[in-house]
Each structure stands twice: as C-alpha cells, then as structure tokens.
Amino acid sequence: MRRIAILGSTGSIGRSTLNLAESYPERFQVVSLAAGRNLDAMFEQAAHWRPRVVSVAAEADAEVLKSRFKTAGLSNIEVVHGSAGSVRVATHPEVDFVVSAIVGVAGLEATYEAVRAGKTVGLANKECLVVAGELITAEARRQGRPLLPIDSEHNAVHQCLRGGKIEEVRRIWLTASGGPFLKTPKSEFSSITVQQALKHPTWKMGKRITIDSATLMNKGFEVIEACRLFNLAPSQVEVIVHPQSTVHSMVEFVDGSILAQFSVTDMRLPILYALTYPERIESDLRFPVMYLRHLEFCPPDLEKFPCLRLAYEAAEAGGAKTIALNAADEIAVAAFLDGCIRFDEIPRLIENVISATKSHKLESIKQVLEADTEARRVAREQVGQVNRSNSPIPQPTSEIGQRE
Image 1 (spheres, rainbow, N blue to C red):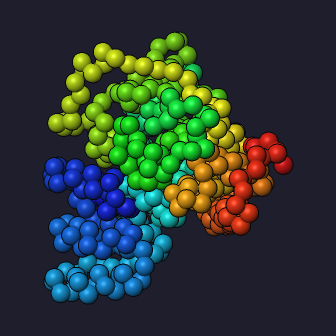
Image 2 (cartoon, helix red, strand yellow):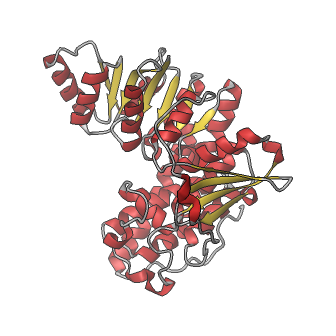
C-alpha cells in the first residue's frame, strides 16, 4: 500500500491521481491533500477520501472549510493553510509518496521539505526543478530517494533509461508539438491574439502553460528539468518538433541505439508509472500501434521561437539565471493575457530580465525565493514602462547567460 500526499489536488494532475487511486484501492491510500482556493472541490475530495490533513491557500478559506467540515461531521480532518500548510501535507509522517503538482513556485518549499523528510516525490511541477533543481536533486541524492518525473516527456526518458546506464547516454530528445504557430510566419507574431495563442493543436491545458507551449518556453523549461533530473549537460538535451505528439521522448546511447517511448496522450499513464515504480502494473491505457503510420520530425526554429534559445542559455549559466527565466516568463505571459504586451514582446521582456540578473548559485530555498521576488519586480517594472510609454519593449542589448 502506497500512502500518498497530493500537492495541487484540485488541478488536472491531482484529479488524475485521485482517479487512479480510485481504480486501484488496494494499492493507494490518500493521506493528505493541498489545494489553492477551490473550496468546493477540496470539500468534495475530503468528504470522499477522508484524509488526515488538508491545506488551502488562505487562512480565511481554511476557517470556512473547517466550518463546512464540522457541519458535515468531518471535524477529525485537520485543516491548515499557506506555505506551512503545504509543508505539513507533504511531510505528514504517514506519507511515503508525494505528488508535486502545485503550479508555480508556490509548491517549491513543500516539495523541497518532502525530499528532506525522505519522501519519494513524483514531480509534475516544472518550476521546482527550473528554479531550485540543483538544491532539490542534491538533497534527493543525500536522502537516497528517487525523484520520479510525471511530465510525459521526462517520464518517457526515465522509462527509456531502464534500457541502459546514464553514462551510456549520448543525448536525449524531447519532442514538442510545435504549438499553434509552427507554420505561422514570424512577421505575423506581433499581431497574434490571446484567443489564437490559447488554441493548442494537441493538448487542453491551463492558460500559462498553453502560452508557454505557443512560445516553446515550455519546452525550454523541460530542457532545464532534463539537465537536472538526469545530470546531463544542456548540449546533451535536444528538442525536436513532432506535431503528432505520439513519441514522447527518445534516448540515444553511445553505440547509436535509440530507444523511444510512445503511448496514449493520457497523463494517468506517467502518473501511474511514477506511483508504482519500480513495478509496472496492469492498466487499460492502450495505444493503437497503427497510429505510427505517419510521424514527422523537424528541428525547432530558434529565430522564430527565441524563448527556447533563452532557456538553453539560462541552463548553461545556472543559478539565478534560471530563476529569472521562470519569473520573467510568468509575468510576461500574464501581461500578454491581460493585453498589456504583444505576443512577440514576451521573449524580449524575459531576455531583459535575465540580462539584469547576476549569475550566482543559490545556497538555500530562502535565497531562491528572494531571487524570484527580485526578478518578478524587474519584470513588472518592464511591463509598467511599456504601459506608461505605450511603446514596444526594446530589443535587448546584452548577451544572455553571460557569467558575471
């Protein structure tokens, strides 16, 4: 019996995890849950699963939830809130597996503390490894516990690596659908609307990740994740555009052999793989092999999609540069969604913020969060300057990723 905590239980990954727990009641017990502000969904989950503890974002929401639990006869469920609450959920003594699926840096502290507490962590949160991957992976090595990727691409790499040693890897290939603008001329990027950017050709996702997929920043984050998860240099991680999204990733070994993983595009499969590792168990998630009749691959256009280039450069520099990359992207995407900047200004804003960030290593989660706060301040300042002047973000004048 695997006893699980879910950070982000009301999101898509959290709901899929609970769906699997329902399908395999003899294998999984839900011990603790953390969510944001969706109190109705949290109440329903708690009433069904009867966890030991639940956490929500705000203190006021926690008080509302306590009152609802009391009325429903669920007073035995502990209700906590905020970052400390998420840490409580992740480090509960009965938990042995933590699903990290809180979006953004909000889940960083809880994920790190889960690793420190000796829990096995399934990572569906890109930001944790992008901003603090060096700290998290070092702590996981100290604890002797695996970090199991839930992202479909890294989960696929993990599966392929069971066919060889990491020292035998020449490079890994992360596939990208190419997003909605794969064939759109760069000259039209300045007129791309929010509605157009939110129409992903393959996946239905949240707004930020959908925009990140349109700019290929999402794939850039995955490059950084891969470097840290598998201890590879950025030069060993290549992105290849694959519009069918059938092959999730490939691993090329030094002898020229290439192993590829393909499966149904259903996140329950990588979640199940992580939850049951090192076992593989029976499921009904079947892939029709005839879908392999038509597969296309091509290199990404880094001139059209400079966010991917910025991610590679930040990965090379490491430290505070990757923190700035993530923070600036979040602010830039929000500004685009709010109509404050154009689609083609997203990478310019990010590049300016990275240029203003000194390259240095961070020694603690506190320092990571401080660097994140500063990068967001600079990014908001950039957006404010555009709004005040009503003029485009200037082209960056300095190289990114240069070590000071």
